[in-house]
Length: 207
Image 1 (spheres, rainbow, N blue to C red):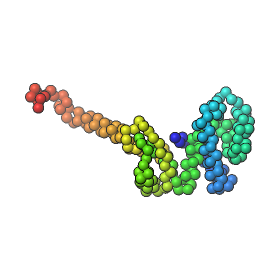
Image 2 (image 1 turned 135 degrees about the vertical axis):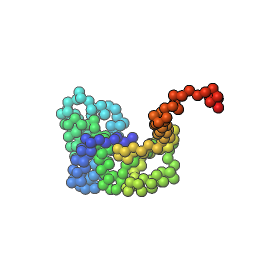
Image 3 (image 1 turned 135 degrees about the horizontal axis):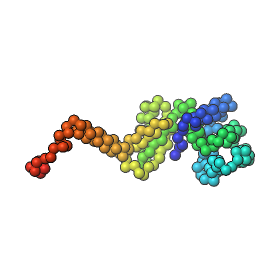
Image 4 (image 1 turned 180 degrees about the vertical axis):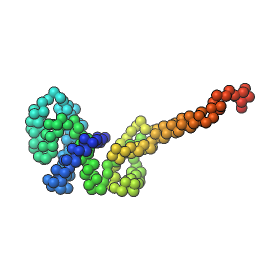
């Protein structure tokens, strides 16, 4: 699942995006985006590497040397220097949200938007296409859909666009109905307390 962005991640992502654009325009931006994703895959797949990036025990200067040795021949100088800046600022643990923020900027620059979709069962091709069309009409951009399975869902669908979550799952609808019933019940108690305080007669109990 993609990491969620926050204010700090967006600030760093915007700085890297601007530097990438100045260094080579669209081609450079896409190159940087690809390298960020490669590093994210390494973080997600290697717990020891994640620990290496975030451990407070490791001296930042020593870690900078290690990052240079590890990545100097694998990524561009721009991304390597960005890693070193994050290290010096104690922000390497924030790398995945920053990479997600950079990807959002890339998608926005080319009229696309990242959309996470959760369902209880895999999306069928026709449903995927209909969802693609409806989201395009609503958002005014080309949606890049990331489909996820959530076996805990009873049914329906959940959609996240940026920081906005749209919950159309069956569980969400049941919670909404429950809330409405509680509110209606509360209003009935307030408006007609006699209905709840009066004791029915024997005949009424068995009607």
